[in-house]
Length: 428
Image (cartoon, rainbow, N blue to C red; front, side, top):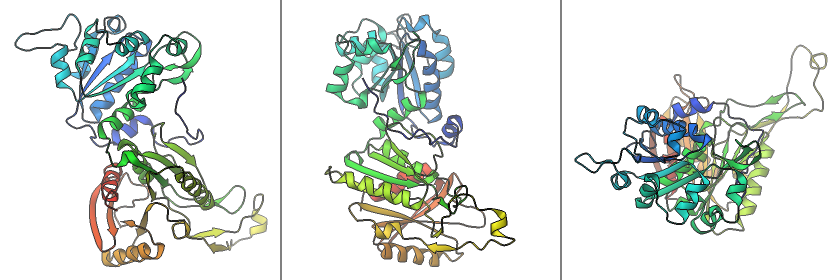
């Protein structure tokens, strides 16, 4: 079994996972998640999964297999979840029931993480000989399983893991990662990282039938235009808006391609990421994405949120010396080509416009002019003010502009804005 990972390893997130989680909106507000836990050395990650789900606003209840209780006392899960843990010994059917039927009725999604090979195979064959399996069999909504076992066990011809992939689709299976396993061997068998598990759960719960049929390309960050081998011309774009659009499109079910010079925070492994620097790199990466569109009938969208340099320096080989430059550096720049204006219009295209005028009507007019000149479908206007700069901020205010339509999407965090932008894009 192989992972679906296609990721540029050189792009390391600028924000640590913990800080990123803290910055997220309550995407799972009012959602009820059942967390099934099996006996595995990876069980400690279940606690982190539960904490992330709670940070996102979800209520989490835990059901443990008998072997899971040999690794962790149920009391620990109860202390963090604030719910009684369902085990064989705690099942009750009285006035305040806590049993596999009651739990299965309560939840919106059922996640087993980690799932042992034994549990995985029993599920595939409809066996329910413990309270976790009984609960899972009785549950009829969204189910997800994150296996954790020796890779030989998972790939054994008698196991049902491949059957799950072939017959049920990967949306239900969170692929294990390749690393050194507890047994000392290396292979695809280690439990996925907690944040990746949560990403899969978000995608399962938030899928939109429209975006499931779409290919989405998002550009982010600022271009870096070199004028010698060690220096470059750039801007303060953080890539956060682009990354937020990529994550939102992923959660809604789209196939996502993220082209960026920055990786502001961790993104799902199923998002294809291309690391770029110059405006020429951005253009070539987008053209390569467009070329692949000829092999699909899916509707496609390009969100051009990258801040591409308007001017390019003349490139010099090596490093310019101070002695060569002198007291004053008269750097010569030439006007850059407009990527959006030159790209083939084979997809719905949404541009981004940054303005700094104090006159809001003038900013709107400049954005409308750009919409017409670039011949794109819509444009998102954001503004630098004396109190805020959207280039580096976690928050922003966007005006969605489409023909004569202008919609104020409000001031909020960039991920929430990304979902609002995608909602408007559905109407193009």
